[in-house]
Amino acid sequence: MIPAALAAAPELGVGLGYREELHDAILTHRDHIGWLEIVADRYLDRPGQQLLRTLRESFVLVTHGLEMSIGSYAPLDTDYVDAVAALADAVDAPWASDHLCFTREEGVELHELAPVLRTPERAKAVAARAQRVQERLGRPFLLENISYYVDFPSEMSEPEFITAILEACDCGLLLDLNNLAVNAANHGFDAYAYLDALPLERVVQVHLAGNTPRPDDSGLRPDRHNGPVADEVFALLEHLERRHHVKAAMVERDQDFPADFRELTGELDRTRACLAAGAVGSAAR
Image (cartoon, rainbow, N blue to C red; front, side):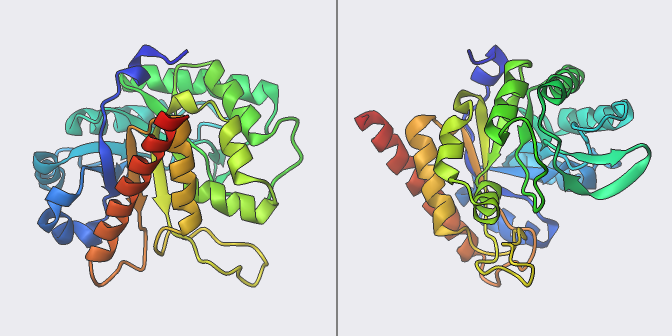
């Protein structure tokens, strides 16, 4: 069953991850961009600044955090949650999100998105923590699957772990299809089987990004969000849309920004085309 707040989440269509390096181009091409995701941690101390007010005049904004550390054993940082809530209120975000990971433990900041040990006990603990965050935010809270290079032996597969968490709380899923593709390549599993095993009815938002196509010296495919969205990621999006309607999909580029912004608007167009093709496939099933 889909929680009422997730069912009521608005249809945003296709958007872009906001980066200040792209600010002028984003405003120039505002008619081509459905909405923007802002990285919450960059604006927690300035939620009312003119930059965000300018963006809010043209776009729906959603917030995406980096430091909720939802999988940590340490006590929840309620000051951080409240700061994210204030930012989300300031921009009237329909939902907020962060990563299914931990970033700190026992006072140590990892400066990384570290995977959570997948056990039934941790699933229950993460679910309770996520529910508490959602209630404090006053809006839907989405958890994002991360990319990881080391996978510790666990009692549960990642889809089983995510399912157990979401069955125990009313939160949603932000499905990063690039992270899924990277993990499938690095850990040797079937990305489509993984996708089909998820509780897709909880997917509210999707991330699309590009990763370096060749393995680096470690033999692993790195996740850098530094290039065009890969064909395999678009294929996963179309596959997903056949099974569950995606309310919000967005393209992320974190570095190596293109000299011609039309490269990104072209990716937005292709995202729309994949969603349309997936919807046709869904209707034909």
